[in-house]
Amino acid sequence: QLQIVESGGGLVQPGGSLRLSCTASGFALDGAMIGWFRQASGKEREGVSCISVYSRTKYSDSVKGRFTITRDNAKKTAYLQINSLKPEDTAVYYCAIASSPPLPAFCTISARRGHWDYWGQGTQVTVSS
Image (cartoon, rainbow, N blue to C red; front, side):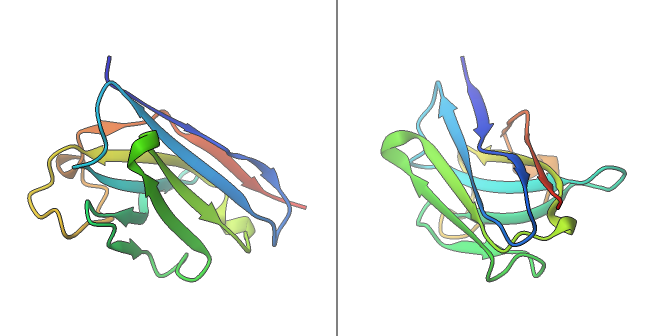
């Protein structure tokens, strides 16, 4: 069964850090594009970061310099290291996978569902003192 599971969310104080994980089961990640998205209460889902098949990365302006995306194909897992957290980072964070991206060297943080084949259920990140 094809499945994506996110983990690592939680409650953290402003300025703190978390590492989110996105683990795939039922398929290999080697040829996949991976993206991280978030959705705050009452807002649309927004792209945060992505990593291409060849590990080229992209970040939204709001997280650039604070978030780092990596991948470990052997573990079928992608990570999102999030540092210097701010209250406005509070959201449910989702991982998405495109199993056969048309341009493997690149990735997109567009949340348009046509770009992505699988979505996880999300993990809550709450930044509050």
